[in-house]
Image (cartoon, rainbow, N blue to C red; front, side, top):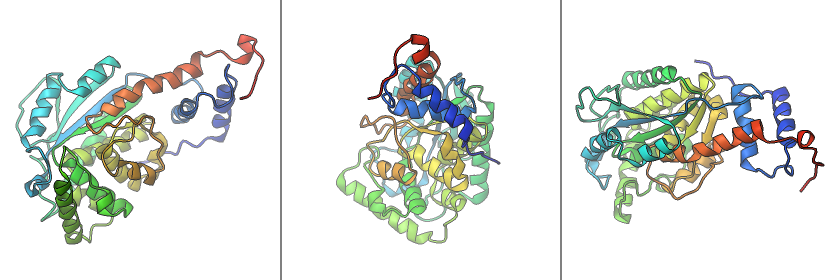
Length: 341
């Protein structure tokens, strides 16, 4: 796999001239200007466009739920997948209102759905093992999940892909990944997840700390992912890597999705050039994870639902960035005198 950095001084200068020559004070469109520039560098052109945006929602179960780290039972994972298929979840509503294709992927749910319209079956196991006692996945299974995600990304027609997830227990996996890959103390990585009390959060912290001590040998990104991650997180990381290799725009959702990116970025740092961070989640630790990646999120709405909801809500901002660059008048065409702030 080869992910090319988007750095291109000549094109960057061309994009800056085009942005600065629009009928506005310099810098007055703020983040949208940086976003238009980033999209141009990703697409390697001044003539930017968004085509057939999609959101991939990866679902899987986690063996660590046996430790009592979630306010909800594991069955909620498959029940929420059924809700996605019935178009009743928040992500269904937000994706539809933004004309965004939604794909739901069974990466490893502990339930047999059978053939279903709208469900992409890539199940590799009925969930992971309990990482409190043993690695969540073998190295081979983890690599298989990465490869499955890459294959899924290769099938996408459009040039924008958002990432979402569903899996009871996956904030625990994400917090463990965050701690192992950033060195941030576990206490600063864990949060309420599905709605834990203060005592529940402390219990989750202790479960992760004990697991980290048990698996201290896991340091390389792939080993960390196999030891603490989930099948949905691994498959998502693979899809991110392939999407970046294909020079697509990656829309990054909240805490769990960002943990998958954290793994992918440790493997191929240039992937970050392709990432647009949709929002800062209200889940404890997400802001520090974003800071560790040098990320600037577009939105801060107090969300902590997951599912890719932040991606769907941020998509209009991508359209705004593209449209102002393509459609807004220049000083010359509008015959307006240039002015600064």
